[in-house]
Length: 116
Image 1 (cartoon, rainbow, N blue to C red):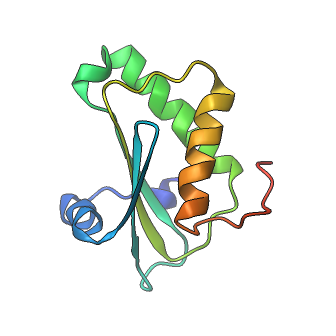
Image 2 (cartoon, rainbow, N blue to C red):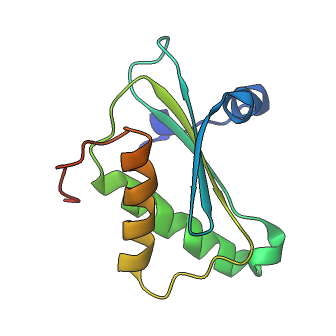
């Protein structure tokens, strides 16, 4: 995923968290805030220490980035994805299905969009 899609600043992430547009699906929370000042979407991921050691957390974040990369996300949105400590996807398809459900409910991707 390209660096221009990263949401890095703490105040930007807090702004997304304080916005009222959010969904929780099977242990993953997705928070969204429209941002007309950016050309593309920006996204940040959070996996808590209780999820596992650093290798497990980084592995999940890499998988999340890969899933998001396959989606055709509408632009001009700030997105924050938060994983609960008890969420353990069995397969990559489970993770893809869960994120697709959340993103579709938030209308970040179309209902008919395929995941490729």
